[in-house]
Image (cartoon, rainbow over all chains, first blue to last red; front, side):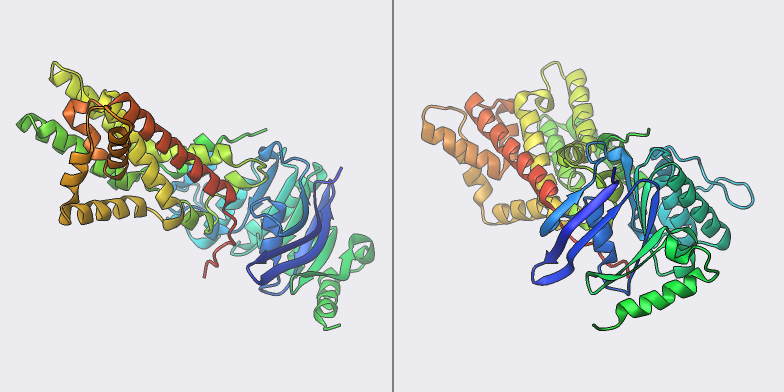
Length: 222
Length: 233
């Protein structure tokens, strides 16, 4: 059973079309990487999947929509409410309280944390529930230190093993190459026919080089 | 599985800051002082608390929605009505606690009934709260209260408050009188706190209906909001 699906979806704001005729599905136990230049419509695409915005045309199907606890979306640390205390935010999502390197618990409001710590807190909260079936992450590695980046990649692989569908948008192609089963390219609001799936890169040492080359092909005018 | 209710989410998100709590406590103390000074003091105190609620209940929605602050509770949700209702309720709770606390104090201190607890007082409070909440949904935090206070000042400066008080009759002798009373109460709800808090049932019904319509409009706005995420830069 699919975890989420967009069918011929177009999203416009007034005369400006952000996403055009996109069809994309994510299955159980699958991690899909979403790659595209700035302004390509990646965030809009993820927000359509999350049901946060409505398509102008087309259909969005989220099988778990009757149970919102099954869908998690994180737009990045800037989307966290800065005046909320960190421990309260984590408790809201039943996430364990985080500690600094020196073992002290992180205190204060979300707005007082460093960018990287805020990003980690946001991800910890969204990844706290092991039963999530659709996970949508927008630039999740942004601002993370190497340890946190590794933690995130491992968490994504755990979610995949648990049967969740995951869509990750990122500019960090080497991180995507490590975890994704396939990658799709969004250019100018359209999905490029160019896409790469794990069978293509299995056994290939330089996955990220392969992805970079495919991304270049996807951006080339047709 | 962790199911988060909208009420619990907004309980955390809309929780007043310490400075706001201190301000609310100060208002309560000052209102009690006003009430203890003279017979008119209770009316002044209630007006002060209502004015505070106009600001506090204007929590705003759209400006925080486009920053992504509500993404976590809205993601994957087919129906947004429970989210909208929870937002409305928790926007009004701090002022409601203040209003009821003062009402209880008034009830204990004086031997007669508290206007704050009478139907007229409660409807005045509910109507004013729901209007500023709905106004602020699109305009931003505190905007509903500021706008209404501005309109009240304009009415006062133009000498229209007296006209509204006159228009607000206490007798429902005719449909015309009742309609005028309802219109006056909707434009300037403080008139309902006069006459020792007695409000004609027909006027109460009219103002309650208006409050319900405004509440439903606010819920509809939240359900329909569809805006792109604001660029954090």
